[in-house]
Length: 190
Image (cartoon, rainbow, N blue to C red):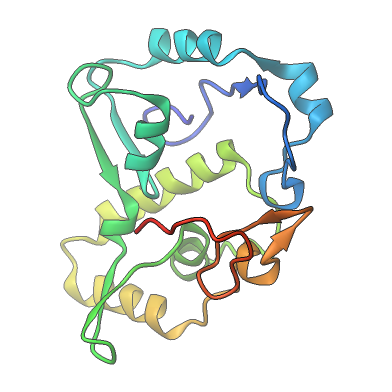
């Protein structure tokens, strides 16, 4: 995770799975068995390190950050002060659909910072740095309505690159959960 200003990472941990992994989805996650065997640690040890380094007054910033907090079993007001969800900050009212359109981190970075992902695998540290850069940019423009409107217009007018799941409805035997191409029949959560 990046430090307070969003620059240099202060913590980067890998969790060694305690159950067999059907696929590491390496083109999406940049993770593989060798990396996790070499650098991974048990989840309990990783959580202990995270909790020891996470200030109680920390504000967590991220794309759909609530899901990460839930998975990590962190408690707002106990383990950290509050969280800011970038998905909510970068949503844009879409007159065509008469509702808000939400955008992923890569699309926001492409439109607002000119940092196209071009299909590269995700990396938690680079995503965290990108999240802080986008948040800091939002802070700079939030009280400048013409500039904010221009950037929001870019989000709407720029074609969204297809996601890994859209390009690979199934990968190494794993269903990617795309509603239109699901092969496993698992329920969808919204």
